[in-house]
Image (cartoon, rainbow, N blue to C red; front, side, top):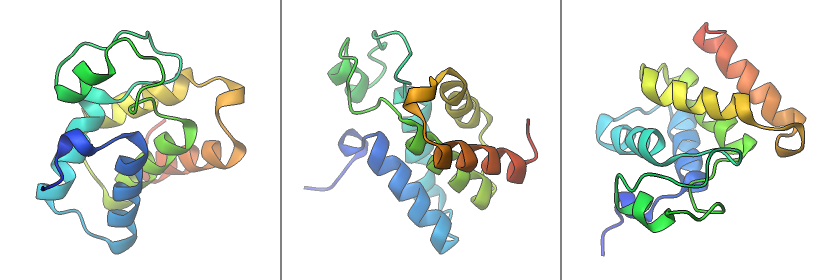
Length: 127
């Protein structure tokens, strides 16, 4: 069976983006589904527990707060860092990730995550 978007979760999406960033590769056929998943599925640990069932993944998560798409500080930092490195221009994905980062509580993010997030903002030239 081929892997599809329904097989992704927050952590593997971050890892795939990081691998693409390290390789300097940004093929739209791979990048587009990852960014789409972030825009439609990702939630933060402090976001409302109900996620609109926009896709198969959203329907699967439903009202579960600990779903596969709850992004931790490290996931957000890795995704933003990879997007900045690859110079990905996707305002909706960037906005979604930065919104999650802004709502993280101190006990949900480590110093290295904060550094990664701030570094991504600096490289992307945003505040």
